[in-house]
Amino acid sequence: MLVLLIVIFSIASPRFLTFSNLLIVLQQGTVLLVAALGMTFVIMAGSIDLSVGSIVALAALAAALTADSLGAAAIIPAIAVGAVAGLINGVLLAKGKVPSFIATMGAMVVYRGIVLLFTRGAPVSIEDEQFLNVYTNRTLGIPHSVIIGLVLMVVAYGIINRTVFGREVRAIGGGERVAILTGIQVARVKIYMYVLLGALCGIAGLLQGARAMAATAQLGEGLELDVIAAVVVGGTPLTGGVGSVVGTTLGVLIITLLSNGMNMAGVDPYLQNIVKGTVLVCAVFVTIDRRKIGIIK
Image (cartoon, rainbow, N blue to C red; front, side, top):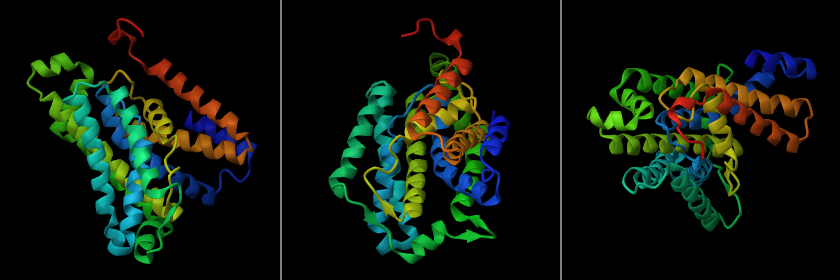
């Protein structure tokens, strides 16, 4: 699919397959990649999170409010805010027994409401030069945000494939009742994976805010669709039990190239949403494991 998209959009627009545009694609995809890495753990465990876009906006606001006083260290409150938001989601799911879809849908509205309450709809500018230099400059022509995204990708790969936590997440998605019988502390693992997702959304929010040089109430709107689509297109089924960082990275490239290529080709923005939604539905149709689902509701 990735190769096919490159061929189609290269024919549709001669500017698509240029070095400058590919750098733009990498920059556009970094925020999506960072959030999608965290979502991979959640979907691999058979859960979902609809609040990632709102957490990204909340973290960007935290970074914007502290950038002048902390500089580049504003990443700390951004991660902390994201982790706390993820912790709340995880506790609602693991301890409160609220289905992840409902818990995170409510959280999405609450977190976005907090951003609106603090900003009153007005953007919060980020003007600190040290902050902007660290997160928006380039080294050897490569944007720092892309480097951060690649480092986090390697870390996430190691966690999934080389740690007990990664194996426990996969086991929960493969069969939660069996995971409980084997002694896995399912509630604890679920809370940890939501905290991890929240922390990564915190970094994604900081990077998005740095790129826009401001935190806005609209920042991250609709991001949850792209994140879920990237993870599912990358081969992590919504039924859980299977998933990989490499697959998610390819999914991010596909979704990002899809958006970038349609913009370059002059596709109607409203039609773009239809295409993205169709891609997501088709990906779920192809990857879902129907053997795990007795009744479709």
